[in-house]
Every structure is written in C-alpha cells, then in structure tokens.
Image (cartoon, rainbow over all chains, first blue to last red; front, side):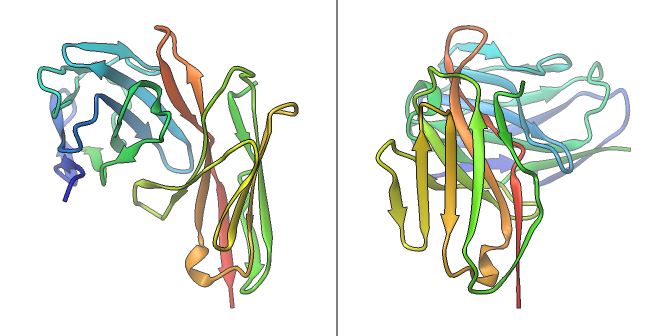
Length: 114
Length: 113
C-alpha cells in the first residue's frame, strides 16, 4: 500500500542535541511538507519542497533544517537552536505543487525535550 | 487577520443532530479548499474537497462562497464517531511564490448520547 511513513513515532531528546525525523513516501508525489502542531493550536509550516534538490522555508523555519536528495525522502533536523522543540511533527506530501488535490499526511512524530 | 479563521468550539451536540461549521479565508486568489478531520493525537485526514457548486458526500455537505470568502461544512444525523476536530484548509501563495495549503486552527465537535 502506498503512503507516508514517519519515524520514530515518539522521540525524546536532551536539550542541546540535534535530532533528525524521518519521512518517506512511496506515492510518487513531487511535493513534500513539514508541519509542527502544538497542543490546542493549528498546523504551522516549517519547510516545504516542490521538487528534488529544492526546498523553501515556511513560516517557522528557524532552528530547523531539511534536505531533499531523493523524491521519496524529506528528513527534518531539529537543531539545538530551536528554542521550543517539544511538539507533534507532521510530514505531508502532494501530487503536485500547492496541494491542488490536498495533502496526504504521515502519522506524525511526537518529540519531547527532556 | 489570520489567513484562515474558524470558531474553535467546542460544539457539543446530541447524537442525530445537524451541525454546521463555518470558515473564512483572507486570500481572494485562493483556488483550492478542503475540510480535513483530525482525531485526538492523530494526523489530519482529508474529509472532502470543497467546490464552488457545493458538494455532498453522504451526511456531509460542503459549500463555498467566493464572494464572501466563506466555506461551510454541514453534518447531518451526527454520530458519536463524528467527534473530532474539523480543519478548514485553503491554498495560498507562499513567500517564495509557490502554492501551499494553510490550515485553520480547527473546530472541535463532540457528539454526545
């Protein structure tokens, strides 16, 4: 079955450490996105990529980095520069740029800084 | 003004009731509109797209009013399983010029016996 896989489901990090969240899709989608969701709040866009080897900052990119070396993969690194990293991170993909047909989401990674 | 605005609720309704959610968006150039459903601690899932002519999927009806920049979702004969947060989603032009979807903060629905 096609879909988006995010791993790990839960992640605990010590302050000052970088951590990388995995996102893999086998839907043959061109565009991929990373969102962050805090309790009781909406989704906020971190980074997005419309084609391989290209990506753009979203609304809250500071303290995060991404790469898009393969169409299937869009990993997100949460660096020590991110002041409040504890959140629910969601990866999504869409057939073409802009999400004309909507996004498909992975099941998310819950990151907790301890 | 937020790009997409929704009443956060919660809407507490009895089973079998009809409930309507509204959403407004600020970018008049938006072209794509959706309702997503998000269960507690889960990822959002596409409920339905919203078309200018209005569209229906079983107990769910979506309407779009471009002139007023307003989207609605009507749920008839509410079920306990409809309890979730409903997200209004609109595409906007991003800072780099690319299209992207913007999500409202969601309206929480609780269907009770």
